[in-house]
Each structure stands twice: as structure tokens, then as C-alpha cells.
Image 1 (cartoon, rainbow, N blue to C red):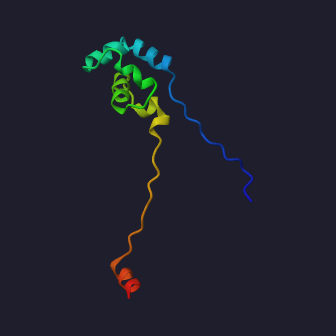
Image 2 (cartoon, rainbow, N blue to C red):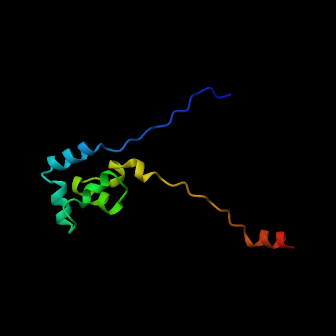
Length: 96
């Protein structure tokens, strides 16, 4: 019997202040970034409260990162379900 405890790795998103500070270090404000991409000056602020892949990509690109590195909880890899495909010879035997 396996007595090892399983621990889940908890991945946390960057804090809003950390993202803003990283942008500030690069000399960019969220307002400037919004206007540079033809959005209203406050539009990119919504990436802090809700999932918006396009806005997240804009912020991440400005920081030279991937959006999944800044917001890992929003980019959890999906588990793909594999449906087996039966070979034609097996299907013929089952149908008979």
C-alpha cells in the first residue's frame, strides 16, 4: 500500500500590483497599452477581474512573456479524451 501523501501543486496568478509594477519598470502604463491597441484607456484593466485572452496576450507581450505564465490558473491544460478507433477487420467481426 502506498503511504505517500499526494500534494497538489498550487499555481497562483500574478498579483495585480505585480503586473502593474512590471509594466511600470518597462516604462509602460496600462492606459498607454490600451490606447496603443485602439482600446478605451480603461479597457485593459478588465484583465485583472475576468478572463479575456486578447487583453491578456497584449499585457503579456508587453512584458515579454506568455499569458499562461502570468495567469496560470486561466490556462490549465485540458485533458484530452482519447476515443479508440477500431481497425476495419475488427469492426467486421463485431458486426457479424
